[in-house]
Image (cartoon, rainbow over all chains, first blue to last red; front, side, top):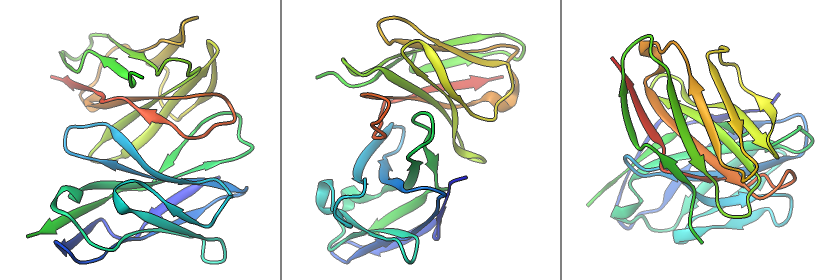
Amino acid sequence: AQSVTQLDSHVSVSEGTPVLLRCNYSSSYSPSLFWYVQHPNKGLQLLLKYTSAATLVKGINGFEAEFKKSETSFHLTKPSAHMSDAAEYFCVVSERGNAGNMLTFGGGTRLMVKP
Amino acid sequence: KAGVTQTPRYLIKTRGQQVTLSCSPISGHRSVSWYQQTPGQGLQFLFEYFSETQRNKGNFPGRFSGRQFSNSRSEMNVSTLELGDSALYLCASSLAAAVYEQYFGPGTRLTVT
């Protein structure tokens, strides 16, 4: 069975400072991993994905994440936060080999950006 | 290319009623999945349809059902609504069985009173 743990439910940073959102996963097989962002009253937007190619994955809006198999982690980072980054972020895992597209979501991290 | 569309966007129903939500996937996408999002339980997988067949089902009671049409459009139905069914229902589509990247619609906000 697969599971995802987002280690912080809330993260607060100042505009212009780095962002780190932490995610650990558990998977029986070789996983695909994703980060999605959800702005208030909106659907989910895909930020980036890892599917066994390069372990450092670059996404939209300056975000990137590094897949570390030995640590079962997939942390999301951004060098410099912008006010528009304030949103909820979800780390998501999907196992290869399962019969279909079932995503398992972490509990979410709410990112607050102070001016 | 148009994104995933969901109708209606907002819905208010009374306990005991039933409701049908609709989802139109991105053109060419054949897989449609449904998720329920609540403050208490977070995002939970309901079911997935591919080529009109349900391939996966989450841990929800039988009151929750769905179907997919030949044009890949999907509907989900909730019968005998309960207060706890109040949630944002999200639909996601993906290209094919081997592609795990999913694209989400804006959701339908269901309120049960």
